[in-house]
Length: 301
Image (cartoon, rainbow, N blue to C red):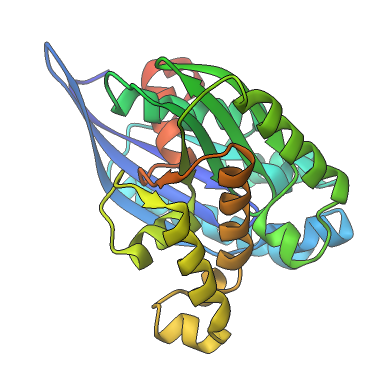
């Protein structure tokens, strides 16, 4: 692989499909990752899957058009290698195998259907690689449209990880099961009781919007009281006001409320008072993964 090259990651999520293009610069002492382009298309595949069990023909056509456009963008940026991953919605769709096969035949794009555990580890490893000499204990909470991935981190190591079928799109459609919330609560309580002064890390598009609303810097602490104030502010606003006053996209203005609720519950169950947002997500994890494991990336042709 060249000392300077471009890698790309496509994350097919339950709420949106994202393309991240990153420049990788390698010298004798360091590797520098620089984001070049991030494109997001709000397909909401989870709306179909979580209510009907499969992805509709209409959504499939949109997905194919999105991936075709992303491939052109990667070619224009002269991307060397890329990887496409699909998460909760595709994991649960009854027709996912056929969709993956059809997209490969039509577009020559391979889709890796990753497990919730692999998703969680990919995300947390980016944080660990970006931070040095971590002194706190952390609960990494990545909230997606269909699932929430948890990683407990102590002494620079991931000590436990778990994925739950609790997500923003799933919650909006009132199909998150009570047992999922119960297991979520118990997992956090049981795994965090051995660790003191836990800091909750928020990951995902909603966490980034919370950071913007808070007017804090990346990795600057947002207290649980401040997060509760943000929650009250957002819930007090109409859908229209969230779009115009908070400058949220229409597909973000509804899901941000269940997302904040998940983050707040994570803080309460872990007895944490501090919340930080590093502005990293699954696509970043995929970029780092194919950088370290070339055999798992797909050459762009």
